[in-house]
Amino acid sequence: MYLDYAATTPVDPAVARAMSGFLTMDGTFGNPASVTHGFGQAAADAVENARREVAALVSSRPEEIIWTSGATEAINLALKGSALARRERGRHIVTSPLEHRAVLDSAEWLESLGFEIGYVELDDHGRVTRKALSRALRPDTVLVSLMLVNNETGTITDTAALGPLIRERGALFHVDAVQGAARLRMDDIATAADLVSISGHKMYGPKGIGAIRVRMPLLGELVPQMHGGGHELGLRSGTLPTHQVVGMGEAAKLAREHGEADAKHVTSLDRKLRAHLDRIRGASLNGSTPRRVPGILNVHFADVAAEALMIGLGNVAISSGSACTAAEVLPSHVLLALGLGEERAHSSVRFSFGRFTTMDEIDHVGWLLAEIVPALRKLSR
Image (cartoon, rainbow, N blue to C red; front, side):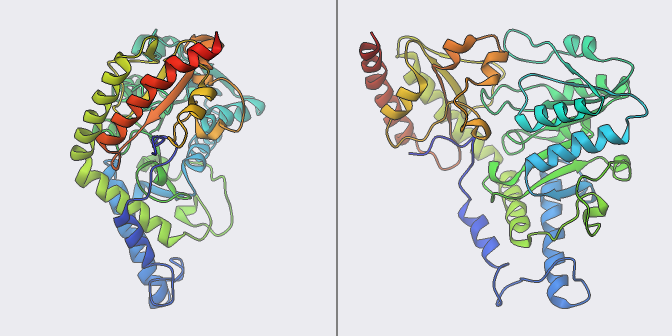
């Protein structure tokens, strides 16, 4: 059973079918940059159609969407490209300690170039408030980067409410919407943000493709991070993988068409799993309960090691942190930043599910947990 949707979602069958028509000789296999012949023009048309679908998902203009190899590249372009473009105006960047490593590592790299990184203070639930952000901003702040939905706890940051404050202070606002683009309506968020990063494989599309939405006035300002051909308005050189672009476009279309149904389905699954957890002594949620997307639950099981629990669950796929740091045997930096301590972090696991998860699977996992958690506590005494 697969309950690790926050790490990656399975590709929707409709997405796979759409992609299959852009690979072989009998399909649309041309280079989308080779517009001097029909093969390339057909591929270019498919790329632009996908661009329109992604733009519609994030409430933007198609010309504001720049393709990347994934969210990590999109985030690098957003932070490095905008900070370097504005370094004469100021060298102060604000983010939070809960961000994805792509943000934190990019910020550390910029710090090595002379930028100063400020980390906004979080409330007791790990949320960024307007008051705390206001204190963190300075006259020389050029960029703020915050995630819409935390990938480990599911906590929602009210980026739509924070955007006007950031704009008033003259800074740019980057929103990491990787976990939120297919889970939340993006209208107000897109209005508030200058830069938005998204990923194909977190919304039932393929891996290896992502996008950054760049607000129109910034398109000519951002400093490119890849050079070699001037593709994507000069912001991201490299031949586009048409089949992956088409896949992400189809995934974006499905997210808009089935967003409400997906949300209703996942909310029901979320309630069911929480009902099972309520019956297990010493099980509690990490992060914000009222401001959390359904389908991502970070759960602490007192006196149970996360590794032991994952082994005990056998072929049930869950995680103990972000997939990008899973190779490191370290406690979650997100849970530590929330002040939960190493012991609690080492006893916490993440359940995440979505479109293809069934109620029977949630029930089965709930019953397994009810058996395994008490048994592991007895073994640890």
